[in-house]
Amino acid sequence: MDIFVFTNCNTVCPPMSCNMAEVQGLLNIQDYKIVAFTVDSENDTHEVLSEYLSKYKVADESK
Image (cartoon, rainbow, N blue to C red; front, side):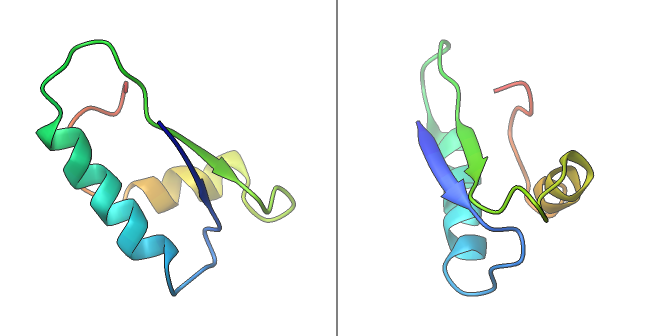
């Protein structure tokens, strides 16, 4: 499952990211990956993306 995010978006991205974290907790399968792609690579560095992810309760960060 792929999603596209801006870490500096404060409208649809935070609720979407929160919903994706909830979906992950509800998945009843073993073999899956949720991948988030930035559409703002100049600002969304690895460090910024890690900080963004830390705001959400993710069931399994390896997924």
